[in-house]
Image 1 (cartoon, rainbow, N blue to C red):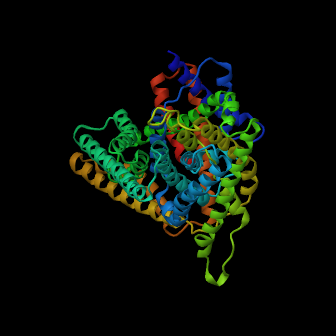
Image 2 (tube, rainbow, N blue to C red):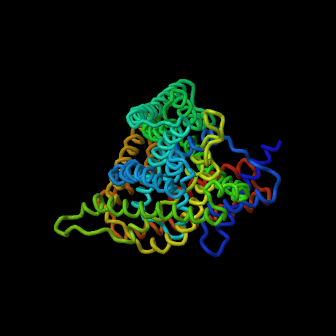
Image 3 (cartoon, rainbow, N blue to C red):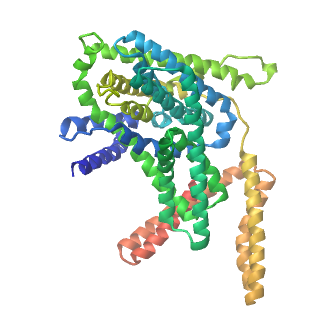
Length: 543
């Protein structure tokens, strides 16, 4: 009963946090609100969450990483793949080594392996927290794509580094050669397992659907089970379950293209996954807040591990770690942008240094969030000998402080840096979109003409079928005429007005339907059906 109550408290806090963050007169990131609400739960109730590291990792990371891999724009990722790889792999390795040595030098009481583990968990970034921070100042699309790609890969690379650091702490030994070979197996096998599980499941699902039809609920449940299946199988084979979940998500995109599901299934599945993503991310930050009172209560004992007496030293360490992370990221982003995106400008324009605002925005966007907290909480409770894991509470305290300080810094600096910031110019995709619309419209017209002919041959009364088909084909022909020669600014402005008027009409329809339903002039089933049609129409015209 207590576990159920805790879950309900956490979910309620997630719901309330979204409303509170919108109500506040100043822009406060939703994750910060969730942390504060979690702290309130920890202080005002008798409920306490004892987090099992392995269970925490299993419940939270596979679905979040799977969804990131599934939804990330693949073309955009490939376009800036060199920048993404430099940030996600090169920067992570630099952070783990550089910050690990720095933390061990600053806090000699923390063993080197534990310092590397802490550096590994603070290396991944969290684009969801960045999006929440910059909600009122939109991030340039290309910059967001780079951040999403970086986060997708550095989550995996950071947690793989954490795995090796924890193994070194548990065994007390570390061999670079053995670690390199182990890394190849852990990473390679994890990637292959994720791809294999997704392809196998989607093939079986398509085979069953083709013969016995599609059940929407089962299809959604299968998509929810894939990341957990990939993760558990990879972990059972001593590979990386994190990379398995990521590769499963990426593979899901291509599997869906060749094995289409029903439209209603995709719509409902997207809604389910949106809810899961919102809930899991929110619960992680609420849990961080819920753990804070206990973490702060043990601050005196924790700081004693460092050889100091005052808890203020913990704040000094947190600020020093955040400063070190920011400096490393600033230098790496500057070098990366100079060598990749900005160096691709025409040589005639000369080699230019990156705009400092762009570098600073990319640096501050390296906010630590859900993955950092999930990673640090997976530190073992005890060594193989049964002794307590060294400096575990200190590592959790420092990681929690880094998350909060990076969120606060980004919430102050990012809106100012992003205002008016533009990324290097990129070609418009309007021509690609127009060509796709024309091709799909032409295919629709051919299909309607074939259907017209088949109905006329089978049932007669060709005029009736011709008239009905012509009404639909006229809409497609109008699309072809407007797109095939390119649309002028006036035409596009007219299209925007048409969408606006359609939305006005949908709003009026919805208000009239509500009045009819309240007056009981239409039944609930009819109201539900018409409401769904209006929802689909509104979504189409807003998109």
